[in-house]
Image 1 (tube, rainbow, N blue to C red):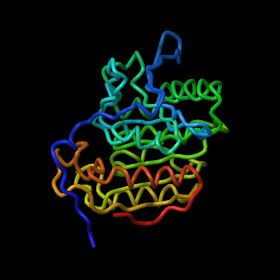
Image 2: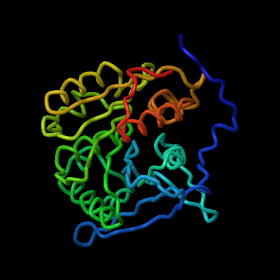
Image 3: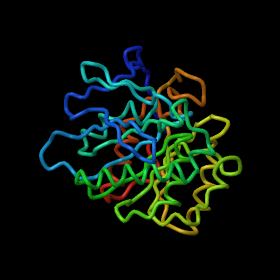
Length: 267
């Protein structure tokens, strides 16, 4: 049975409180003459894991977050607006902005490029120097192009897994990625009622089948959430962005990263 939530206007606020986390924006050099900014949120609690999730927002990836003077993170994307949900579970999140030579945004071609891989390899090396033991790539919507392509290109031994949420359709977007080169385990999370024209559920299953030839894939279908969407089907406040059921999706991702078994379906 489906469970739907009525979401009040207060729930549409796209800020995440960072009082329980150490939050700041940083910038590193990646390629010659190129820099990349990113948001870093680390749990304060003692004994927090040394796992870092590199987050890739959808759309063109431009301005995925804003850090206010009071230390509050603002962002519409499912991954960014759920950042505090991850840190409360002991995980560090690293939300990336486009590099300085693509400041206006990243298209699909760049997301699949060697330059993008070089940028994230530099970020991964930086995180290793900061003491993070395990790194996971987490993409949402068009960010799944980045996560899947990078998983096929990067050989870092600390890269331990890939999470694809609201994965784009196979034929138009994912078929050009050599999914047979992905060797790290994959978690896919997809809403049954995702009505975005470029991410229907059957296409996500097609991506899963192509990944399964090379690696293990856990696939979780999501049902329920907000009774009414507050955005168009391909935007963030809809089933495409897990609107109204974010906490349960974050729990599935956190459990999987921690090595716990995840269900085939949540609602």
